[in-house]
Image (cartoon, rainbow, N blue to C red; front, top):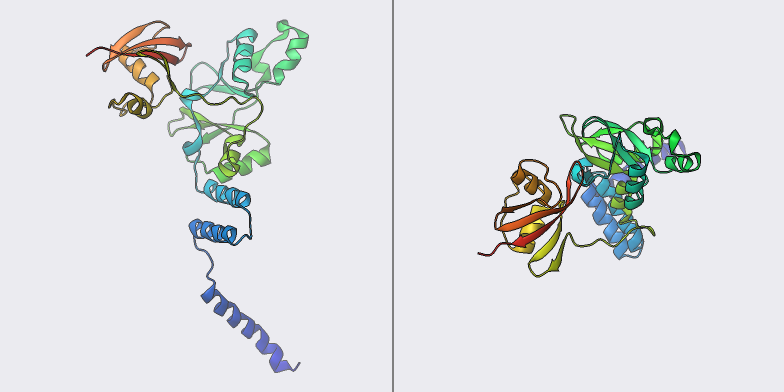
Length: 280
């Protein structure tokens, strides 16, 4: 090969690459990448399961914490002054592995308790119980945190839960590494997961058990009404607003054509209510 041919080779290669790109342009957005992946699946280059995971990974890169977090109203947490028996009762019923522990106020997160830390106490005896000594530091993130960045931090720092706060520092909800992974691969279930029940259950004629965290939109659709969700998002919030305080169990109130009685609650929130339609 002579010297002139050697000099021309890189130019020819560069020209060929430009020519090829004119027929096979590079993707300029995640939507175009997703379309290429779907075409690859249609051509049997990748299987549907792989396509699903790849599309999930692309979706995560565009999502923020606020979009998939477990909202504050649905968080299962502990209070700093609870007894060991009270804590064990919540741990057993919820079957979660990590719990945020609330301090003096609902926005004061004292730390995270790992359920496995309680196992050693059961052998030592309740006399040695000191909740504060078992807590791990809570990771606090803003609502705007991107999920792909958070997943990387979860892996690098080896923590599995983050508390999400709003612009004022108030707790909005929480996120776990499992929540992000489920966005990528789909629902992850284990042997302890129970089948989700409907948030509104008919108990008898004109009597319905309603979870307090039921969205007002779902309530409206079920009962064919048009309650406003401008100030409250859930049925529980609507009931608390109507009472002007946190009601106690068995307290009832007539609002918007319904009789609503609180059937389960704790010191911070309503859990379930019974709903009856008032006669016209």
